[in-house]
Length: 221
Image (cartoon, rainbow, N blue to C red; front, side):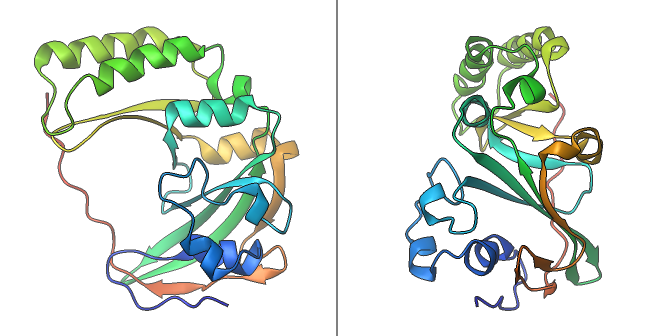
């Protein structure tokens, strides 16, 4: 079993889940490339043979996912695709697990993205990525991308499209900003749920030493 070391700036629950619950080997986990479309490919998931996206959140209602088009494609496919979310509470210098949940997001495009088409998301994605990642958008670029976002917003499903565009990045991501509401309204999507560090016949470290995340203040455009 993988054990977490004391860390001041992060945690390794994702890898513990891969090894201790979904039974991938340490070598296999270490060989998963950081650009992989999923956190754990189905062929390494020996529990239920599904592609897995694993997220960790300190907010019970917000789960940041990943690249918007990548998620759109994943949930548009008939190939099994599951989301595993570890929620934690920050208590002083420690993060303590409050719940772990696995959701089946296979073929859930309409549920997550409403009536948005891939072409519409691509349009917004292009506007965001047209800004070099080493500078902030100009007023005109900012106005353009947010005008597109505003026009698409009425079409959203449960997933919210997040523009990440500043002097360090130019990305379009998505998130579930009403996560508990989503879970409560779609119990048929819940594969497994735990309110401890034990999950699906395995376990991960219940508490780790880790300081609260520090976020830089956003500059108004």
